[in-house]
Length: 509
Image (cartoon, rainbow, N blue to C red; front, side):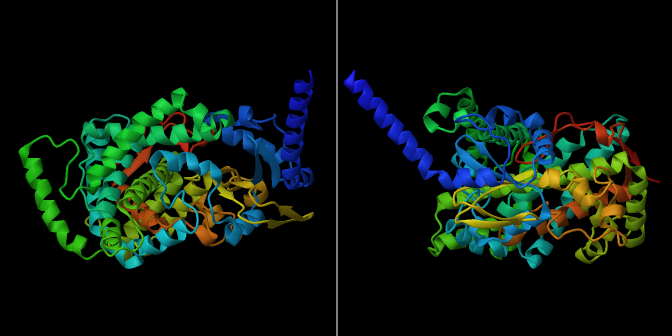
């Protein structure tokens, strides 16, 4: 009996100490009240489904005054969806580190720029940044133009000649991943062959696995997670991705799905043509290889991690943003015709497109921005308060304790009528980005984030998207029976749809 009393007393003391050590979180939660959640799992049950996660958070933002505090597992979670608070977080030197939840991604595919924290992030960003400079991006235009022609050929064969609906998203993913492999690793992989499907499924699978774990607090402990079915799925897709990246890092090109000797010879010729560019240190792999060779605190494991993350982030976000732009234009033919009119006025009828021509395509950029406003490629980003953060709200200032996890809901902020007006849920490039559009808050539109940790590849993504869109809509008209209000999005690391509608392709005369 005495032993039981002593044990209970010790457990009670430990519990009281745990609560006392977290008193600053509870005080912040008292001031910025949000949904309470359940013990140990917080909002886990309500947030566990990616299909309804974004809609659930949108409802909370109207029920409670954001920013508000709730709990994910035992972690204090600050939810932010207004431009003023987003600006404070993105510009704070105390919030440059990603959230602790990103450890699930780094444990799966490596600790690259997308997930790493300072000082590792600062060092790698400084070493890799030259590979995304403006002049380097201009050197990528021949690759972009070549892959755009491959895309047009696919649309011609599958859409025009076969007279059937086309699943454009899959075609775009292959084109964008092909461009990413060439411009970062110097390798042409020939993804148009069916053998590449395992790689696309692996990239989709790893993001789904990581998001499900983020939204399931009971799977946070490593010991429990390793016994789950989700961990088994992670191991399968990770082995595919690691094999793919190792293939890219090999000095000899190994082409995915090569069917015959002629294709091998063509690949060898392309490799020979690309050698001068590689030797100029103008691509990611040559930049980092040089850093490893001269011993600038970068190992080959660092290179593998960065290659895995950069390729995944580049092709996932770019193909997502590009697809939604095409889909929005297909659903709104009036804006598609305005875009075509600009392309007809600024570009030749056929042939490659130069950087100077792309820079004149202002309406094309408006169409891209409006699609990314409605369908943020990365719907939510997570940060961690490395030190105490003083957050200013209309009704006062609030101290956010060190260690608080911060969720920035980009998707719902960019659709909020309180920010964008009564047309917030409509696709209308002129109303939101045209010359007569009301001036929005600088941080109301952040598809690539902003501030101290802005996406390193945003210029790359915009350049590739503008060129591909210009090539497509210069020659083709795209339509669909889908309607904007019928689309159902899924919360993921990059935005997904529950179902991808088919599109019709018609050649312009």
